[in-house]
Image (tube, rainbow, N blue to C red):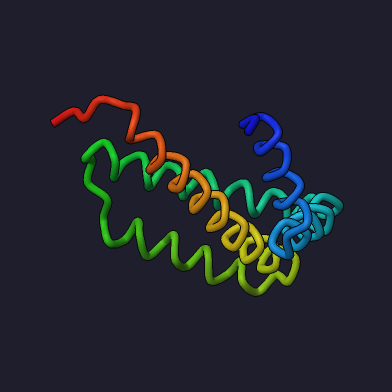
Length: 114
């Protein structure tokens, strides 16, 4: 069994998935709307900054979290942005699941830090 062939097979399966097709359609929709694209990029930057603070142990206030939630709620009013965020989430779940499956398999051949 050639792992490279299986990787290409996985890519083909991903491209055929409903989640991939929904993500591609959402990207095409948003790609033609500069305002929607800016809204999504701004939201992602704020999410990343919030997560960065959290991971570095910096304090994240409830106000920061509330502001992020308010922004998300506003974005839900824009149909193309809402569809994009939904598709992004659903496709992201698949990618994370695949990464976990691979990471779990690789634990057999890595040193345990404990």
